[in-house]
Image 1 (cartoon, one colour):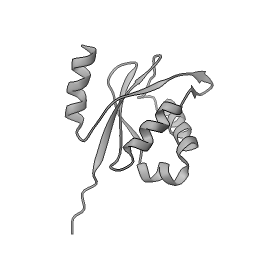
Image 2 (tube, one colour):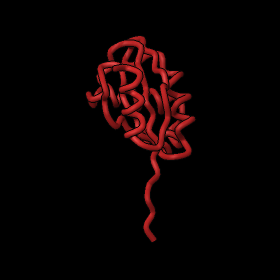
Image 3 (cartoon, rainbow, N blue to C red):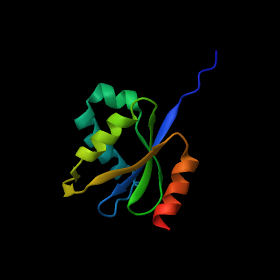
Image 4 (cartoon, one colour):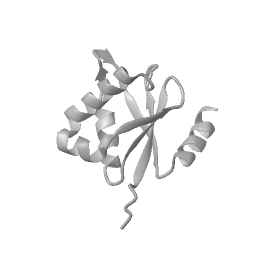
Length: 108
């Protein structure tokens, strides 16, 4: 039996420039999310920064079923590595293509 992992993608905007491609910054974000979600729920979500669209916008991938919990935890992140930041969920989708087309509509 072949099981395909179902993912959801979250388009996130930051209040200030945010280098999501930098591994240390992404690790700080992961630690902050783990603090709000708890280790078990964070591990179940399998949160990853999928791609960086600009200096303020990035796409995160999560397991299906945990996208609402991750979006809520992103809203609670107010400090990242001792600097203030706000993270806003723009859209949640099942495909990366849809999110990137939405990004082009909103920010182009």
